[in-house]
Image 1 (tube, rainbow, N blue to C red):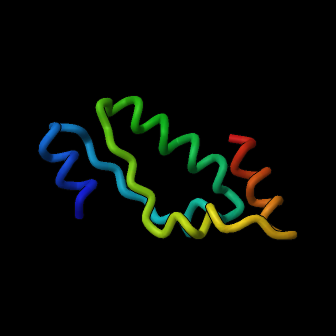
Image 2: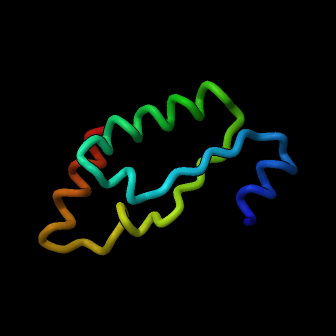
Length: 72
C-alpha cells in the first residue's frame, strides 16, 4: 500500500481507519479522536480506507452526512 510505504519511508506514524466506521452515529467523535491521535503521534499519515462511505456524491441524503462530518 502506497500510503503505508510513504509513512515508513518518512518515519511517520501510519493510522488506518475504515470509512464505514466514521459514517456511524458516533462518527464525528471518532473523527475528532482520530485527528487528535494524529496530532499526538505527529508526524502522521491518516489513511481512510473506503472513504466513499463518507464522501459520496451529494444527494438528498448526502447533505445530512456532509453536515454531520462538518460538525467535527
